[in-house]
Amino acid sequence: QQQVKQSPQSLIVQKGGISIINCAYENTAFDYFPWYQQFPGKGPALLIAIRPDVSEKKEGRFTISFNKSAKQFSLHIMDSQPGDSATYFCAAIPSGGYQKVTFGTGTKLQVIP
Amino acid sequence: NAGVTQTPKFRILKIGQSMTLQCTQDMNHNYMYWYRQDPGMGLKLIYYSVGAGITDKGEVPNGYNVSRSTTEDFPLRLELAAPSQTSVYFCASNDPPRRNTGELFFGEGSRLTVL
Image (cartoon, rainbow over all chains, first blue to last red; front, side):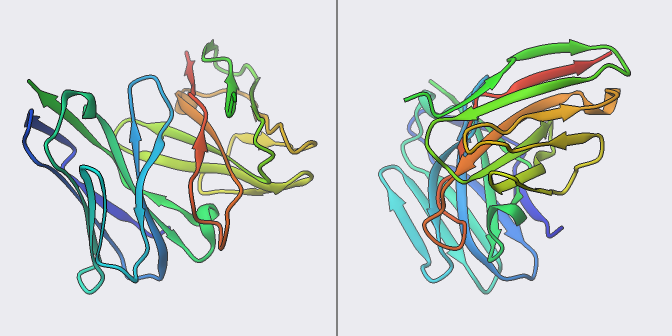
């Protein structure tokens, strides 16, 4: 199973600050890179996703930056809010689809007032 | 719209007992999955199904069994529970637009403790 390395494991950010979570993947052909957000006691939910033919995707305060040559992608949360406090998972989906998905180990984000 | 519904939400089992985690979805999705989530380990795929009557193993299938008799239901069976099966289990489904990507819809999870 290919690995996706996610960092940091936990992150504390002040309200209004920028949260940055990084993921790196190994040498394989991935087609799709989603980020999932999980609140305590809930299942993960898709937050934002990118395909490898673009370098950046922005949706509101959330941006994915993708560096294909470095095999890295990151999630940036601008103007972080206490309501963003959750665990974030990156994932890499190969051409085989979600049957072959690799999830990162998760980052627990806490946004303090 | 209920989405993906899992039962039970919590369960304590004794070593060697068996049980079934139920999962049902009302989105008419063909693809369904079972994951387990352990602290610091992310999500690991146990089994998946691409349609009624079709199932296959994921990354960590040992100690589990599944069946898919209908599009809606995808139960996960634990036989002879072991402490290593203490985890949070998530059922998910999707109907991918192309090459099985897109959004995966998760249930709220079932927390299982084996003592």
